[in-house]
Image (cartoon, rainbow, N blue to C red; front, side):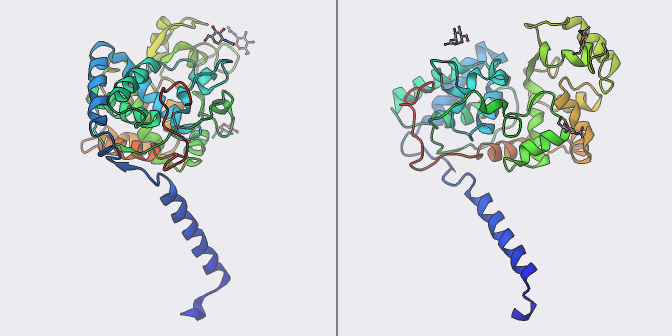
Length: 329
Ligand SMILES: *[C@@H]1O[C@H](CO)[C@@H](O)[C@H](O)[C@H]1NC(C)=O
Ligand SMILES: *[C@@H]1O[C@H](CO)[C@@H](O)[C@H](O)[C@H]1NC(C)=O
Ligand SMILES: *[C@@H]1O[C@H](CO)[C@@H](O)[C@H](O)[C@H]1NC(C)=O
């Protein structure tokens, strides 16, 4: 056997060990039911508050799902997106985060948890649990959420706009999107599956206005977008409209379903980053599968959410458990 060893073989083996190590170390220390003993009703408390919230403010489902994504992609899922800053220099003041909504809901959940079990449940875990609960509230899939994250102490407004490690922008092409996900250990499948979360999302006109009015700077429209759809969107969004909101999946933003993929397939994706999913064979094939009989989108969404929720987590004695989600202790 030893005679087959060569330097190439050893090299490959080392790479494999490295890859295994890095996959396993991701999310190490998380588990389903982490608070079983320390705060037995934690998940029940979160769900109860979220049921009340969703009954009166269902439009917060998309933004709250998005908040977890924006948290995980920057410094890992450590609640850094929640931190305030007296000088507006934390993540939440970064341009891609200025439209996030629902911070007060996270505070409300935290208050209920602090009442039951002071100083036990982290804000990063609250974001993960809330993301699941808003998905369920909109008739989407249920998945078991791993918990045990600790909260980070650092939040910088420049991080989300870093061209390499920041949040993928709404105008990202397929190459940029795949790179951004790969950087965090997420696959091309995770990219298309998680994009399906746009089924309950909304966007400001400013994020796609260029596709309607001035795509290349010559007063043109985006040729990759359905012409009839452009005409309809122009009625809703006038040039330089800073306030109007459009649904990413019109008519069903309160329902988690596969209609987002149907729209993108018909060249009616709202953002360039939605339309970009047509420019890769794997993401394109997935969107056909996801809208066909036997679609695995719902199961896949849970699997990819668990993966995303493991990115760069702090566990054990790292970080802290904040008493208030907007401030370090
Ligand atoms: C921080 O931003 C808010 C608006 O979000 C503004 O009213 C306030 O003046 C800003 N504070 C500083 C110190 O820049
Ligand atoms: C995607 O965008 C990047 C950055 O703007 C650019 O360098 C690259 O050529 C683009 N790729 C495709 C396939 O359009
Ligand atoms: C379109 O964009 C170009 C380049 O940014 C700009 O010079 C021009 O004024 C814009 N046209 C309109 C109609 O906004």
